[in-house]
Image (tube, rainbow, N blue to C red):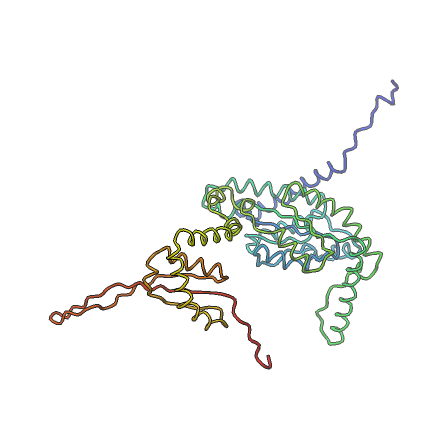
Length: 404
């Protein structure tokens, strides 16, 4: 073996290992700064994070409102590009590049500590690189540690178990470039009108929205860096891939479907164990029609006389009132019929109306009615009467008035 062969060169670390080390160094520095500035027990991050990513022109801004509605969020979304509004950051973005990970992580983490985002938020544009992905993972681990640390203390409500959703909107390169250039034309036209009218509040005109090659470069940066970063989250968090090339309505439906509430995934495990034995409404609805048919057939087979008496009562007493209230779609019927003293008869009324497409609700009101008076003592003897009050709801009639 030659001397040269003995002097083996040091192994070159993989890019991935270097990125992980960079992320650990960045995270440790940022976390230490936050802990020193805010205090350990004030590191209260969002319970729910919806990480919104997508290609340029995929409609993240358009669809943010749908996502917020689906998750019942009212706070403003955190848009990372808006946080990075320094002169140097603007120059990098104008050229289609991305701002450094250290600055991004620091700004995002600080924003997430604001009280408005305590319950949850949409985070648009994070993470975009593998380093940012690793910083996110380290943050979630810290949040889990804080959850366990404070779980049995009076501060537990501030450190709930985090829920992380990754929502990826995807369009191909052709669609992305077309949408970027279309946006550029619309912004230019808007600003031209604003200048003509003396308005100084102008929209940002991105260089990448004006030049087809710059727009293509921006898409390729997304595919080479951000797409890979987002894909790496698939096995860790709740991952939702949405084809954003469809119509706005179709994309909204897909988003709502993807973000349907699932208690087993979002509640604290102890909270879920406490309520899980109660039936889900969806399970009840699934078999409700079959159960209704079974009950009605049972009335006919086992309680025929009572069943037909109830039908006659509905036909003679209820339906005339319902007909008079066909426009508003709500009828209220009071009845003192002794037939209704039987609880089974009351159940039959509700079921018969349900079978016919109405929603009926019954309440029992008890009234004291004078029966006799003792003329010598003036004492009044009363009896209690049950008054059965039914609210019957249905789809009312639409009336078009002239001139409307």
